[in-house]
Image (cartoon, rainbow over all chains, first blue to last red; front, side, top):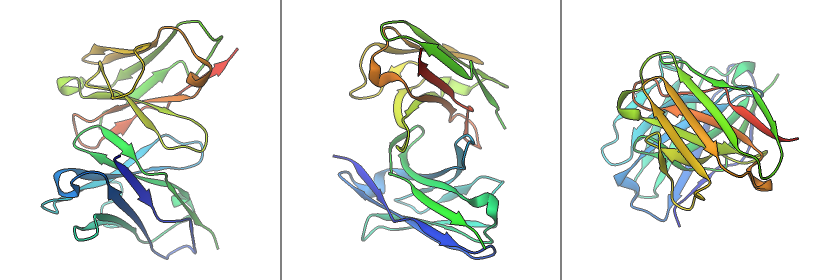
Length: 116
Length: 108
């Protein structure tokens, strides 16, 4: 079955960076995009950006432009989300999701905690 | 950016009742690129409906979606105990992709 498995929880200090991975299985990785969405405590879901896993094109939400980088490794069917300049407001669960347009399925989520 | 506003914020109903959830967009959502997701505590969201009215694979037919333009509705015809969760709408017709703030469906 189609599955996305994310890396484990991370704790970072303000100003640091974090890289979350998302390993896909059960489908041809290069024929879909991978999106990244985050959910801060008590907040709505927030789209960060996406990568076309085949051609590698990316698009980012303006809110995160300059701080987020999404990459992929086709040899391992894995996508990555790198967020720099972390601040306390970046504490959230980060999800990857397979998409063309709508998102299906989603990874299990990765909690990133930013604390001094 | 298209802002999605969901109502009500919380809906209290009993199993067997009908639930009607609303999602209103600040601008028209192109080509009905509107999806609905269900999220249970500690879990990732799950796709229910895409294209405003198409049920995702494996989703029971008690879930239905309707609407176009700026007004969309998710209806659950007869609530089952497992349906009590938070529901989000999402528009994917224009960038940035945006989500509503969610409707919490709780047991009365």
